Length: 212
Ligand SMILES: N[C@@H](CCC(=O)N[C@@H](CS)C(=O)NCC(=O)O)C(=O)O
Image (cartoon, rainbow, N blue to C red; front, side, top):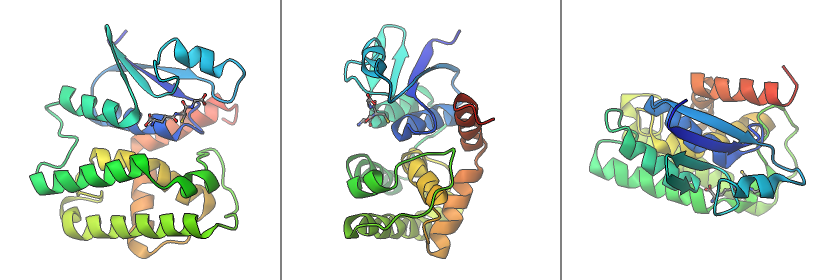
């Protein structure tokens, strides 16, 4: 059994859990995972056994507990010093942290109206202006990152970084609901969805949901 345990929520729905799970996969560090079913009467009680915030994800490493997706990603980046999880260039790294923080604290309308479900293809609902504005802002961010920093690979900063983990659940939402996107954003969504780790998460989500 690995020392590191990542406690996550139901994989089809838990967008916050997907982010550090992808970072851990990318890091190559060994870890075990524990899935807690969300949307059940005993969900909160079960999460509280592991997480002081009453939310997942939470990472445990021996006596240490780290909660909140972005803090976990940062901790994983420090542990995995042989595999850079942030861009190496200081300016690119600062922008990667800015967009990750913007994702972490923003886009509430998008989250509310296009909730994550990696097991389904769903019709695009009528969206309020706030959700449309979120989509426009995210597409602009992706275009900017790809054009300024993306030369070295297919991800936002070329090589994969934590910024890609932070936006991965958004890519799944755009895919699930068939959100119309510009060519750069559409290509980026395709890239994120094709990552082996993402395929693995979705396959597990389908199994857990009894769909595979
Ligand atoms: N800011 C937190 C948000 C975590 C969060 O809201 N997690 C949801 C699941 S995706 C949760 O644990 N909800 C509690 C519940 O469903 O009872 C983070 O970044 O980790």
